[in-house]
Length: 146
Length: 304
Image (tube, rainbow over all chains, first blue to last red; front, side):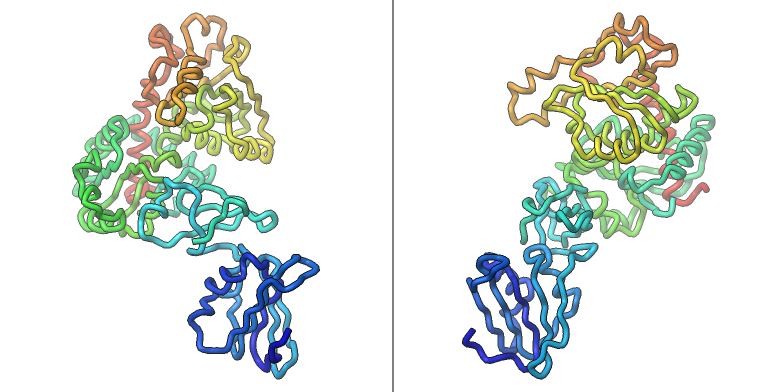
């Protein structure tokens, strides 16, 4: 890729192409001051087409980065310091998800009241989450992000 | 009960369920007590339910408490667009306990997060109605002398009927054998059958209420096929009369058999069953009073 290598920062690799801009929005990369390089529709043996994001001089908290686990479960996080990869992390789904997801049940209180959604992660593979309020379970293909 | 709220039967352990039933026995023996003296209970019925509301209000009144509230959301400020949060916050300034029925699922759980007084869920949409489950358990234990190893036949709308789902979740601690009698369209959802499998609970699924099944039942739990659950009314017309219990079907049934129904019934139990001593649905509703007295006193911390 014709982009200058990162000196310090974070590289998020193996993002499904169709989820790339959602990841940008969840991590609020449109609101930060540091340099962000976004690669879209790059070739990937694993995913066919993938996205990659490089963020200079920025390191995410684990809690923050795990928010993308629902849409990019196979993403890899590389921590770069002084042009070297010093740490590689996998993303893992947290036990509880706050916000982010719209409950599939139209009669759920969360769809009718201005409030924060909460879900318990019942299973990580396959992904099943359960609404803390209406108790409805949702599988991966029912999960719609807000 | 560690929690000072009652939202869902699944929040309760086996021991907590049994404890509530024991307390309810005390209230049945002595229903008029003054333990709520000076307390105010709010009954907020965002969706009308006369039977449940009267039962709760009677429970409070017989314990010497006072009741405020509304029986229909059209008389409350929720019609002006007030959020549930604001209503609950306001009422929790006035009352010592809030008993609420809401048409939205999860409303009671959310109320516990914004209220400073205990919340008792009197039904949230199709989700939970835990006091119904506890009164069903109370009725089963009272009529059978035990909760363990019973043949429980559930009939009617097993797909949308929250009472049968919650009863299943609570009875799973007591080694029952279940018979699920429903048409395919209204069959017991898979998640509950999985729960039976995980707990080694035998269950049989059948589509007709046969004499065989009635004759080996200890509890026959009848439910109404609810018109409001159907988008296709043709479908409703087709299934609504499939399971009607008549008195002559009970001829060879067990002595200890009791027929339960969460009420209101439409036509699924014929009137000629009412005089059979095995019909228990009206006493069942009466038991709701004692169970609710126990729950209210318990969440308020007024009894151990």
